[in-house]
Image (tube, rainbow, N blue to C red; front, side, top):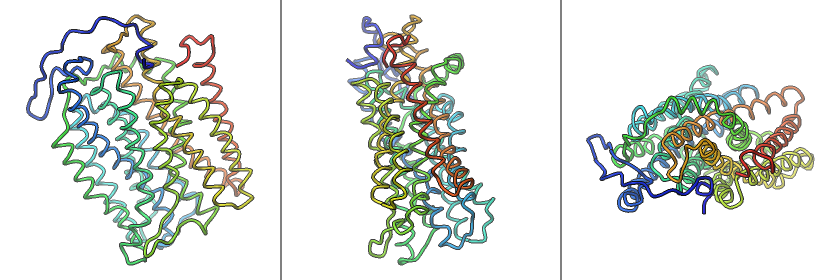
Length: 466
């Protein structure tokens, strides 16, 4: 039995929702993923097709969102002369804008339709991609222009909220956790792919010299293919409607803000460290910033977000078995220990130890990310059950409140992608080292561990263990 099932009383199966009605514009009426007959006959196939193209578009969103994290490493070689503080602003600005955009993006699916908004949000990725290519081609481009274009990369960060909100409506409660985990992990992989592909492409594209504009141009055809796939194969659900009352109720729910804090610690750490990892390697171990591979170069920075992305669905699986709160506590404990170890071992000047510690940090953040996100629908289901509004079929009001909560929490958590680079920037500017920032991270992880235990693991907790 899954956590969702254990959280709600078992009631009689619902009546059939009736046959699906397909209207022009790929609109579907009478969708009910909880209707077993509809789900097994046609629903699962439709949901799987939409999930596949949702992952493709969200993947490219993360690619664009994280492009500047690796491009900034090559700006000096391309003739740009920026300060360390300016570089950190270029890294953190996409996260600031992306986190903010997640709030309106959450409500675009109900307003325009999941398919329609996926097409639009995918095509919007062309703007920051082409803009980056044009800006980095001229070393005389003012810093303000580069910062504005980096901000536009936030379009990619907003995609996550709308993509997750859309997929939430396609799957029944009993399969929602795995579907959301796959959707999220597929998107998160975009950060790793961007940091793997860009160093190879900018060198190969200019016969082992530097052709930095390719960092933007190479994604344009893929974005067009993804947008076409969404237009051709995805669907709009007429029942995926926004519920203003449900959204307001979610905002008033104290546990939304508690989970948002925890999500800053897990997802915020993942996306924040993914953004700064190439910069940290260059600053601390310049000799290991790139490795020659024939005419191309490779940065090992991509391994961090790769490990974190792959760990996310496993964190969700472990949460299903042992409880999301327990896995989240363990994740924060590991992250605190590793952050402390990074500070203590940096004087050894051992790159491979540094890399290994960060890979463990990324794995813990990824697993905690999946576990924390898995806790959200469970918490809302139990709160609904306590109020007599939730059952095995996840009531409409509970589903819409959970969807709004998922989007809002993902938005708040993404601000960690802005905070982590800026805390590192402040530490570097004040003391000349990153030690103060990492001690701050340790304190933050310990605080979040205590919050998780207090609200979701204590014997006397009103929610019990989630």
